[in-house]
Length: 140
Image 1 (cartoon, rainbow, N blue to C red):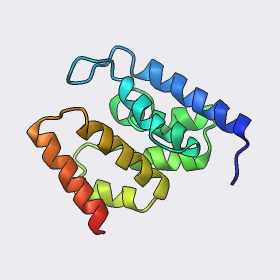
Image 2: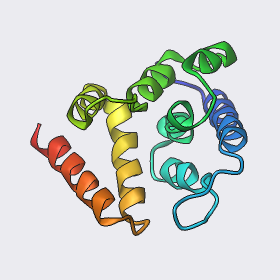
Image 3: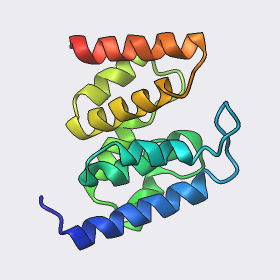
C-alpha cells in the first residue's frame, strides 16, 4: 500500500509523540536522554519505516502496549513490525532474531537499531550480542 506523504507525515509525528512521552525520563547507559536513540534509528531509515523506528522500543521498555498502538489506529504493517521487534522476557535471542528476519520492515529497523547501539560504545557483553545478531542476520 502506498501512503500519501501527508498521511505518512501524520503517522511519523504520531509515533514520535508517543515515543517521546513513553520514554520520558529514561536514560541511556551514558546518561543521555533515551529518546535520542529512537530518533537516530528513525533518522537512519526510509520514511515509510520511521513510525516503526520511533516505536521500536516502546512496547518492550515502557507501559505502552500493542493494543494502545492499535487503538491509536497505526497501520497493520507498523503494528506487526513493532510486535516482532519487541523482545519478550525469556525469549531466546535466536528465536527473537528469527522472527525479525521474516519481516523486511522489522529487519531494516533492527539493523538500524543495532548500528546505533554499536556506535553508542556498548559494554563488551553488548558488543558480543550485537556481533552475534549481525552474524545471524547475515548468515540466514
